[in-house]
Each structure stands twice: as structure tokens, then as C-alpha cells.
Image 1 (cartoon, rainbow, N blue to C red):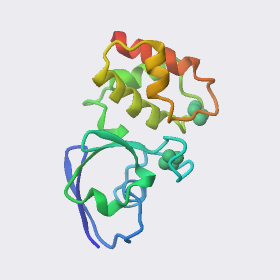
Image 2: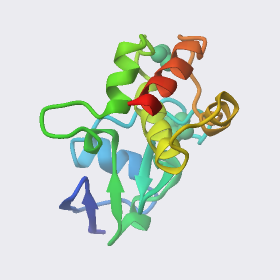
Image 3: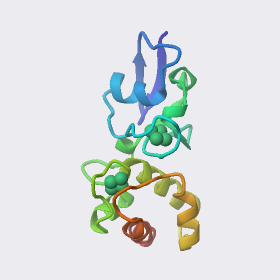
Image 4: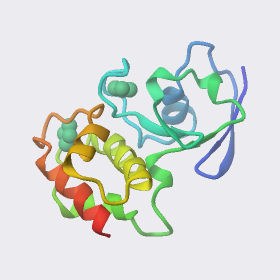
Length: 152
Ligand code: FES
Ligand code: FES
């Protein structure tokens, strides 16, 4: 089947999409957007988090066909012209990126949190990021990154 979707502000089209194919596969393998990561493919880790019509979703759990006619924003779409988004820059500055596999999903989840709650308490940050697993950082640097992004 053919899927038409607006990704990061651009109309995109993919042919030959299999009915059981995930939005994550569509983004990474067909549309050349490897930012969202494939870590578990079971909705457990949050590494594949993207916005679908402004709502964060696990792209591995969404069928590609469900994105037909809709809007997707990936971690690649957060950065401005030649500059990282403040949330992205804060992850870098706080040293919250180690292997980086969890980072795109965490950045999207933090971006969503700060759009809703500009000055979140630590508990709110923890709750918002509870679906995003990181095996490397111990989470403290990630909390620091989100606090820094909120200030910015
Ligand atoms: S790859 Fe989608 S939640 Fe882990
Ligand atoms: S930095 Fe490696 S999983 Fe989070």
C-alpha cells in the first residue's frame, strides 16, 4: 500500500508498505530518518518515541498505515536551522548522552513535557519520562538535562 504522511513539515510518500509494517520501520527504513531508535519493538523502552499529530507515541507500536494523512514529528524535526533545540542542547551539556540509544525518545518525551509543563517538579519529570528506559546514565544526568532545558 502507499502511505502519505507529513513528516517534520514535509509531505512524504512511501510505496509498497506492508500492512503489518510499523511507523518506526517506515520512518527509519523508507524515509531515511534514523533518529527514532529501534531498541525493543514492543512498546517497552520509549526509544522510538515520535509525535503523531502532536501526541507522543511509540512508533514501533503504530502501524505505518495509521499515519496516512497525518502529521509526524521526529527528533530530527525538533532542531532549528543549524542549531539544536534547547532540549537537545541541554542533554549534551548535562552529559545525559552516553551510548545515545535512549536519547531521541527521551528528548521527544522531555520536549512534550516542557510544552505542557514549562517548569516541572522532579516528580513530574520522572513521571513524564517513566516510559523511557536508559541503561547507561542512571537517570540523574537526564533529570539535570530536563531541569536545564526548563530554565532555557
Ligand atoms: S522500540 Fe518502541 S518502545 Fe522500544
Ligand atoms: S545513554 Fe545508553 S541507554 Fe541511555
